[in-house]
Length: 329
Image (tube, rainbow, N blue to C red; front, side):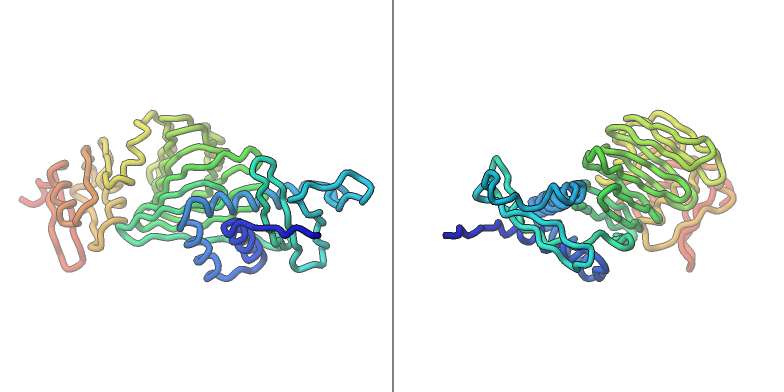
């Protein structure tokens, strides 16, 4: 008598999503998949387990995953023999992965490897933040007016930060580096927590945990450890400096921290949080700002900025202009 195989509904859903997202998945599929991932922490863990099983099978020689001959030792009761799908098959079926500790069974419907990379785009509006849980266990937080693209495959995890700011809490996977492309530069890690600001010609890579390597600049590859930051202002040379690790992540709790930061750089960041454009008058081009700005109602943010620096704000039909106090006399 054949014993029926019972499958956990979350594992079944994870396997279905894995199969559905192979090949030319539509944008609607990726949107629905992201909603499923974020609905329950167990969903991401189940999807990662399904993906890991398939990657392990891809690494095995074909002869190693054929069903055992009848005269060999019988398979465990909760395991069904596996066969690699043929290259011409559009979809293979992998069922019955035995787990020694829990005797769980994962159903996996798989397809051939992608012909071309498939990217998932994430973005936020001005003043909006968004948390994203990736299938590999990594977590991203996007700041206001931020756009990035994500691609995960068997050998590498790729993210392109098109514009804005994002923090990364990367799951450690020894054989799958996590690469963030920022303009001409690349930030490579295996597992760490770091923050990247890439906007209006400025770049800042700050590390709170682990190590990252930043390459692509004239200075060559630069390794950053906890409490270090590679910063580059528009038109300037990149510099590595020591920073308080939590300062770079303060925006996640609604705070923007500045220490003798050029007003032009502060305004470029504020414009990702406010609807009314702010610009700096030439009279205030050399002004620097020190203090903590709360991400709040935009008029209140401008008033606080006036307290931190010798400037005044003038509202016009085209937005807000920040001028040096001496220029208003």
